[in-house]
Length: 128
Image 1 (cartoon, rainbow, N blue to C red):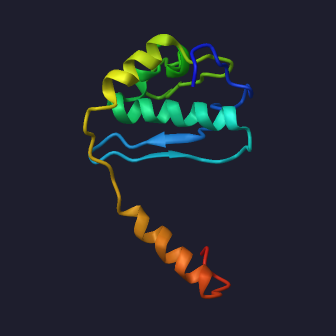
Image 2 (cartoon, one colour; image 1 turned 135 degrees about the vertical axis):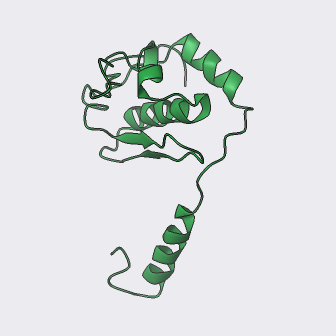
């Protein structure tokens, strides 16, 4: 990603399209509700910022670029970065944090493997 690349969809973050756990170990998710690569990459970068910078909504959403700027209270998670662009500060902050080890939640992979196995075996209810 380059600084200055804006989201292409104004509603990209307005529908809670991503989440990062607040505890340890960390887990980040991006929910695919679009096939727009720019939206998905910006969502992934935003959630990775939560994860690697270890910032909660109030801390992250009071910044520039893909950090988001609409945090108003503990009841309002904010984080809307619609029309925002990745900033050089976002890039610098993440570059500094990338080498930092952050324990990740990995137990979810078992459910994915089980679903894939059930699908491959022809189980019509593999996704239930």
